[in-house]
Length: 287
Ligand code: SAM
Image 1 (cartoon, rainbow, N blue to C red):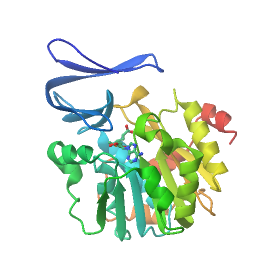
Image 2 (spheres, helix red, strand yellow):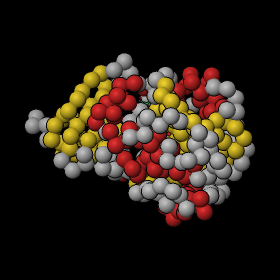
Image 3 (cartoon, protein in one colour):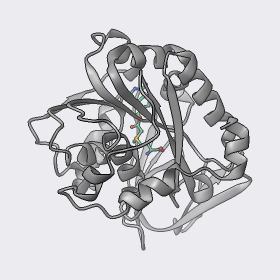
Image 4 (tube, rainbow, N blue to C red):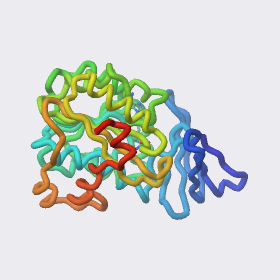
């Protein structure tokens, strides 16, 4: 839920479940539109650069998106031995795509975003996230990710990254066993699914539901990683990885240490630390 004061000096998102709110000082509302899927707003802020809001929920800011995008990509790609074919479901702002394309071993990546307007607005207001959109390895498909995964050839991809909105509206089905079963079928042996999994502090029930559904859908190993994300409810976020036919106990530490591209958050120590679970999460997951 968003609330603008009369002078349009603050954007506020109220987090119903958390009993809290997050505000950014805004200079201007740059764009607003209603697409067939959702409402999108773009703001210029005083200190956080541009801000994209979908259905009243903060999606991306110039200032802090690197935390989320790097953690949605590098742990999974440095866990897989050699991910050649990658699918991103959602991710219309192109920040996840940018990080995937930093990996030289990736030969093809499909970005499957239901709402083309998100990508067109990202190109206009977040050009730095779209800097690699012309890479010949990238394909843009503007269709429903649920249908796309259900129709994908079996054992044809190495990593599926679900960078979606919350489990409501068009993203609801992305948190279901039927979708996870499609992902499991489409992944090659040792393939990895990674999905943004909300806040450990207030959405633990959603994370537990996702982990159970992933296991029920044929994945052998499941791990949840946590990281900071000031823009999202509670400022603390997570992604959950599931692997087909192999475990998730380690990652390619030497490869990550010798990576040939710069990151601002991700490194080997951050990866190790993100895998460590606090007591309340261990207890909730029975790990
Ligand atoms: N980082 C963000 C977060 O966690 O709040 C997500 C950003 S990204 C903009 C989310 C995208 O998922 C949106 O652009 C939305 O259109 C897309 N999306 C939602 N449901 C989808 C579906 N069923 N298939 C493909 N894309 C979907």
